Length: 269
Image (cartoon, rainbow, N blue to C red; front, top):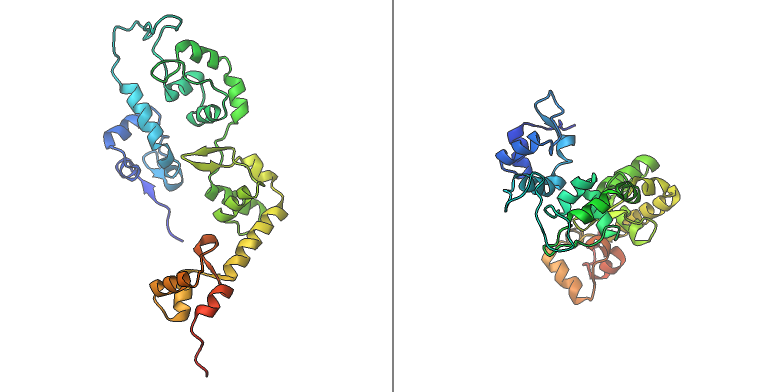
């Protein structure tokens, strides 16, 4: 079994694509969890939770270090025009922190229409709007949940652990397409699935999707496999298949029954 990696601070900053100085500041501001190996290194498991948060971390760093503009008071108050409360308006990261929500919770609340649109000319929320949302923090938290959900790869692992079946990412996406599994939200355009919804899926529904995938894999060929069986290059197979009007099906594979007429007849023994 391959050994698990450990990352020192320099290694981890490079692995995340962050400048080392930014990474150090993120650690000091607790935007990066503390090292969990000997107090000096990050385990591979912990490190893998960070790449999806790099943009959020960088945004937080930028907001915390941005110079103030104008003559603000002690609380950073500014007059933003008639009918608006005093204080600099808040962007989405600042608003989430002000309310006491995780950023993903705020994004999900916005996506679901639970948070009103920004009410300032620069596309941010005024202090008055932010204060009203803070009064609804418990309601928002209850509506979006306390876990961002799992991506399709981790969701497959969760289902495999629970059912004992060889569940793959494609099975999770098929369950979604069939309407049996509804995403709880999205992250960077990718669906996220709630643990409660994964746990509620009947095992026989999961088994049916897994069996369908395995049956298709057994009854189909990749272009590379088909070319190898024919003794052709992949290019020759793909051109021949296209001329015959064949198109790949799921996972870019061709049905064996459709490919068989294209292949050269085996030499008689």
